[in-house]
Image 1: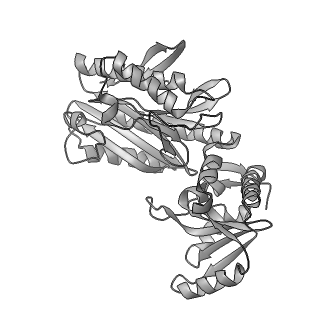
Image 2: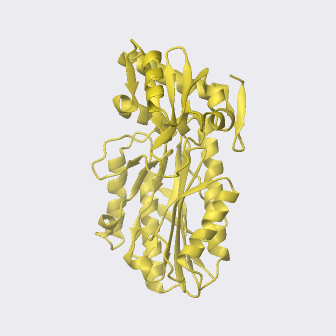
Image 3: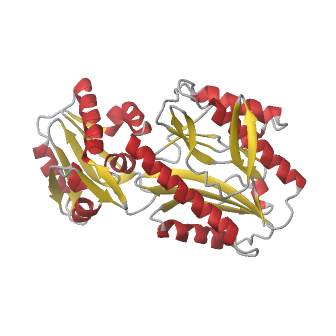
Length: 371
């Protein structure tokens, strides 16, 4: 294993890789296993930063990693093994490979039976909760990657909001976002566009052939290095109606309430309840029921969706993506919990914002762009 490698434009150090492998080795030792078979796309990306999929929506990875007490091994078919080894970080984490023909499941089964004979094997489901906790707390290197991703994702949405023309369809606008993502090395795993009155009736506006005439809401979940940044922005052609402006300012106060409460040692439920209280204070007490409010982010759009009774404690190094909505308006950015306070990863300084003071904190929250 070399001291570092470059994947998709970013240097990954040997120290970071070994930190994660050693965390897993400590876990399997504590639980009495000889090793762990890592099979999910999300955990394979967490370990390597690589793309262990062909279909973006895949839950299961195209390969497996065996994390043993002494070795790390790549288990892959003949189609994928070379790409994963040479391009997706497998060579930097693995000591050897187990290769099988894509068309011969029996050969794979026999090879694995022989390799793991007599060993106590853990699968991800056996260690789901502790693995999730390991993945949710980001290393310093991951946090810097996330910051770079956040700027790329927000820059994509905001540039499209400034550049598309009235009359383009939701699908055409979504296509602009997807194109910009690929050009920046990101995968648009969530790409929503709502037009005009459709924003009022669809909290998740999957794009259609409807033209955007006056108002467009653009929503993006962009993935790179396995991490996912979430961001939403609105754009209005002409003077923004007072009712819509009022709703946007109200929902901005809600997300600011979530941010103010998103502090180390505070439970997700307590932070949720702070946002719910601000919904009521702003005159929209029932709107929180119409859409999930977000929660912990990272290697999934939402690692955990927050609920009023969520017990999970927020810790330094976690990312959060709150996304409150009030019919027709939405606020969504991805933030990082740092010792000195929240760092907004998707704030670019290039979009109109509102200054919100709440609970002794001051935040800049994006407004709808008027064109």
